[in-house]
Length: 391
Image 1 (tube, rainbow, N blue to C red):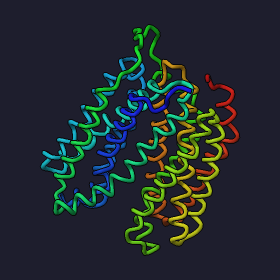
Image 2 (cartoon, one colour; image 1 turned 90 degrees about the horizontal axis):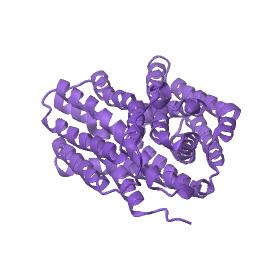
Image 3 (cartoon, rainbow, N blue to C red; image 1 turned 90 degrees about the vertical axis):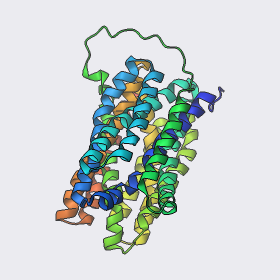
């Protein structure tokens, strides 16, 4: 059996951790920074920060095409360099408008760098252990999500609330990721100029549309719960600082399920992992919507994490296994585009329901959309994947 944790895989794994760590280090505290520094209200803060997500979403399809059409290491280094450079914008932005511009622009290299990094990870993994390796690869994101916010709060307390120090530390870690990625050695590839007319399939894996529909449903429900969990806990359950515990339990569930699901992925039982994940997740969303107590609140976090930790790497492998080697980047960008689109829809419609009808209606909507995704998975997606997979 070929070695899984080869030096190049370790480098791209740590590099991906550093990208996400530098990202998650500042995300939870940006609303506080905008409020304290520029006096922005909640609506303005939402608009200011939304640009990052929109730009990342827009960049994903083009990133897949670029990663498939040009040397992948070059693409990864360029994207990481721009991601590092734009952190400097936060340090020099003296107005809310300028900060919003830098924040929005920052979404593009982040979206592109994550597509490039995951595609490079596929390239350096032995084909026999690719599914297992991509399952472990996601742990780098999960660990960054747990460690980043906790360290951010500690650093902010240590430096007496100076956000500039936090921005500088994020910039430093993104630079370390850039340096590490520059040392990766990729297998040699022949780059042949594109001769055929560029089609939509070069930007989105059209063959994977059933998988994308299911993924949009699953991420939509996640977008609702993850966005409004903090304010719901504070206003209706009197859980003042429960969001930190909620996301910690969520991350623990993700990590545990990725580790326990690695054996099934190692044996290429992708559909089995996806089935287990979607069934566990739907129970978590039902618990969150139906049980209005700390038990439902925290229990749902752990269960949703366990479900998503099985489901997401399985769907990632579905997209990869549906695509020829020349479209690995497109496969990676397609699942990320579907995920981002679902999260955005969840935030939008969940917010409308929460404002006009109440949080409970928003969470029941999250459960209903998730249930629709599960139904679509069993009626269409699973059969489609087993019929059309290439390897």
